Image 1 (cartoon, rainbow, N blue to C red):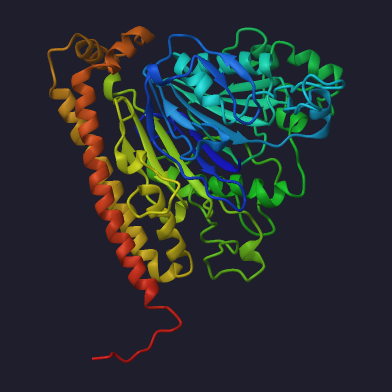
Image 2 (tube, rainbow, N blue to C red):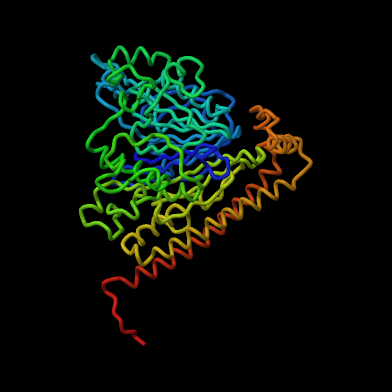
Amino acid sequence: MACTTILVGKDASYDGSTIIARNEDSGNGEFCPKRFVIVKPEEQPRKYRSVLSHVEIDLPDTPLQYSAVPNADLKEGIWGEAGVNEANVAMSATETLTSNERVLGADPLVELVPARGIEGEEGYEPEVPGGIGEEDFLTIVLPYVHSAREGVQRLGALLEEFGTYEMNGVAFSDSEEIWWLETVGGHHWVAKRVPDEAYVTMPNQLGIDEFDLEDALGDREDHMCSADLAEFIEFNHLDLAVEATTPFNPRDAFGSHSDSDHVYNTPRAWSIQRVLNPYDEVWDGEGADHRPESDDIPWARQPERKITIEDVKYVLSSHYQGTPYDPYGKLGDGHSRHMYRPIGINRQSQLAVIQIRPYRPQSNRVIQWMAYGSNPFNTLVPFFPNVDSTPKYLEDTTTRVTSENFYWQNRIIAALCDSAFADTANAVERYQQETGALGHRMVAATDAQVARLGGSDAREMAEAEFDAAADGDIEPMEPEAIIEATRNGEVREILATANESMAAQLKKHTDDLLDKVLYITSMKMKNGFNRSDH
């Protein structure tokens, strides 16, 4: 699945939050309607079967409640994509990655092998299930983990046992850490902790460029990997370093540097870092330090200023503004404007930005910002995921096109605005700013309402942690205490009411934008006539 990911460490974000964000883009030539839902423990399967690979997995009997962004049409499975569980652990899965022939020859992907012949007859060969993949990851991992680190460990164990049929990157976060896991062939994997002071860019290409194998196979402070990775690398001659160097470079060993990468993948990393580090190096012209085709664009780097939610939305909506590569711009020509694959494309399905705020009580600590459809024309708005249900405007997405849900409204708006970009840009920008401001006001008002709430043991535990954390004299809450705090019924009711209010205001503004852009684009129809009938 074509996607773009950005991860923001807590010291690189504007408020000390960990932030993980990813565009989910549908395959070429299709749309994939998405829903934003809450999955309760009783709704979680105990025996899971993948629709695509037919693998069957027995799941633990103690799942946590979690949010997810599944497909509206389940013909290809759930595809939960992004969510937060009751332990305030977030997961984004997955960023499809590239690899090379040496890796895939050494550890082939585990693909479904259909049955051959007729059962009961001579020569019949039964079906062989495939491994796990993007369809499955969120559902079989997120409800069972209590920290970002634990998320890596569970997914790593499942990959080693069942294998995977595709190359994927997966993000996990809690209030302290962000971890990024990349699959290597069918059963191997590497994972690295995102530096607190840095952000990470991931554009459909295996990205980690520095990896401490000794740490990964020893203390596991900032690196983890499959148990036999060192032997796997040595036996298959995968380390391409000219001299014995430390750290090891997984991107060189496991990744690809194809011509198509230079059109499809590396320009997106270049675009994001050009925005977030505009003065650290030269990005444009023949003397640029990095160009869109560069294979050595860093996986992680420190930004020149703290990164906001709006920055995340902007870079994940990028169509190369201010460069000759902008399909809506005037700097280039017909060739340059279509040279590189933009980040904000027509077939975006959803964007989830998960913000975990260390300065808020556990009960309302996490915000899941959501957008549907093509990012240059949509808006990103906040919702609290630790609730019992989500607003129908985002939850009740249908497979039928309708203006009554958020997903299809965004699709219609984007289709109208694309062909009249200059004429509709102001209306879209005002809509994005107005709804974004509404979102920040909603979050602040809800935080204040929760702060006034008293009389709950779970609430008092959360407040005790919050008050003491400012002095740095308290250990983080244990997972059981976090879960107890997030299950506070009074707080959940407040958060659910705030979500409904946000959805209602969002619908009003989206209705207004649809009305405006429909009028603007209708006035540009070729059968228009400049004289009135009256």
